[in-house]
Image (cartoon, rainbow, N blue to C red):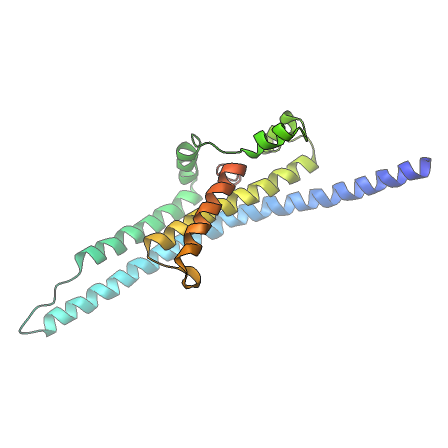
Length: 207
């Protein structure tokens, strides 16, 4: 009996060591992800502005080369490229300097979310206090709770990106896999995921 207890203790200790390593990985992952997303957004903004510049120059050359009838520059298209390009750059720097994260907190915090807490509480699987604790990294009491928080935060990030990418496809009239229903189903799924785990759960990891 004593040997079995010692074996269980060794397994639990070994598992805890692996969990601690996983937690360190998640912490590093989210730290690097912050800057990777920022760089991608800034580069997208620069490339969008450069694309607008190329379109503008092409239209100008067409105007100058046309003698009989001038071909007008598409001002609306140009403005759209400038706005989108500047928005990407703003978002990129917003993630680096944290002000975008605080803006998202302010905008998303009033939304109803983290409904998984109410579901688990209703099913009476765990204590509601334990479930609430794993949604806040500061309140976690052990590596296992911290690991659960990182998993929830990962789902929160996926839900957030799913909604953002779906909206991006909708605004650009894009349809992944050639089926517009995929975009709308992805948007709905992302919203449901965000309501369950919370859109703001992952945001503290970007500060």
